[in-house]
Image (cartoon, rainbow, N blue to C red; front, top):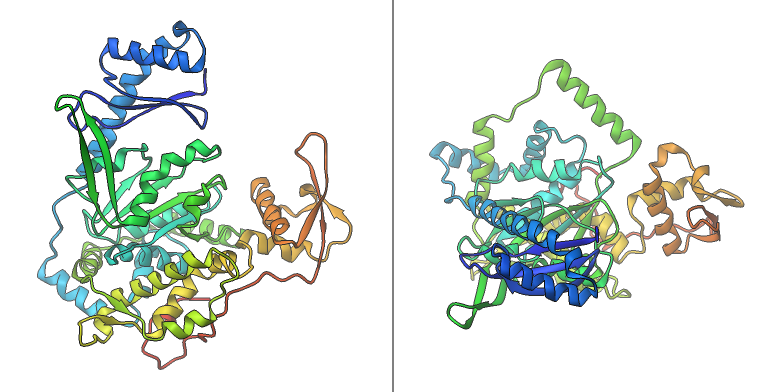
Length: 482
């Protein structure tokens, strides 16, 4: 029974709470009980044993040991989340003045990128811009859910955490892991206009595991949470409500993500090329040889004040109907991809609100450069979602294998393209795209033989005819490298 695990909701002042038993990825039993009372644990164990069709004596010792520990862990996590809900930070007059100067600069995002680079981020400006815009979308009626995907050691968690440090205290709520019900117990603190920065996403293989992220999907989709629970003392049901909306940023190093979550996310990939690894190693060596650059308190507080001074406002995009006519709609994913691209453009307009006009109703009027910026930072995801493209890792592999004649295996590929898992996923992406096919699979199920179908196949890309930023325009894209 090594695969039997328990998840318990925080107490929220009640002795009884929801306890869910999983066997691997499958939920096998749930009930409301008091995990700190021996008689209640034994009753829970009896019901679970019947459900599993096994003797009670085989699981009761674990229940007596693990349920109280899991309950304590759930309460501790809820307390840690609540502790991050500090009173709103207030900038000094000096920080406000510095922030106003930054808000008036067309290269505001370049200043953000330089701050992230001071904190250790190397050659990832486009991803820094995307994370920053996603976090700024907390001020929108429907913020962004950003999923940064990459291999272990690719820097995804470091980058998201570095950008989070540029937001004022109390805005970013960090959690390395979430129990299924943890978010419901933030009703006193709320999630409104905050950033939820989550750690590494767990694998979701079985259908039952999709329920573990139900609260997250509800927050992303509806901007608030609502849960009906039983209050045994009052003998009635009570509703727990947590107000949002909140921007959500999460990292992931695998492909076992529920489709229901993927379709709601803007996806991004850090640069995991050997050239990028060389830059990272070189920068680390430079810092160790000459000392670590530091972001001064004045610089950090000025950036905190930038977010503090931003005012939530409705954004209008007068040019959007013309763009919508050019947006590809052959894939159903377009119904969610287009609103998320628009949300990134709205976040850009909000961030540059001191440089945007207002209409008669006080709404911020976005310019085309806001959409150009949104497209530039999300281009890889849009190419994969609606443009017929493949993730960056697959594009690198395709450049090498496209001219290969005959069959090949994973072992035939140059090591510089990445590790075994990276290459496996890249080849799976290319197979799905129709660029190559699986010619043979050996009996052990591990070694696969591939063959290129069409050497002339090219990854698709989304082109909305927006053109590129040119010197002299009043815009925001000039600090974003290709």
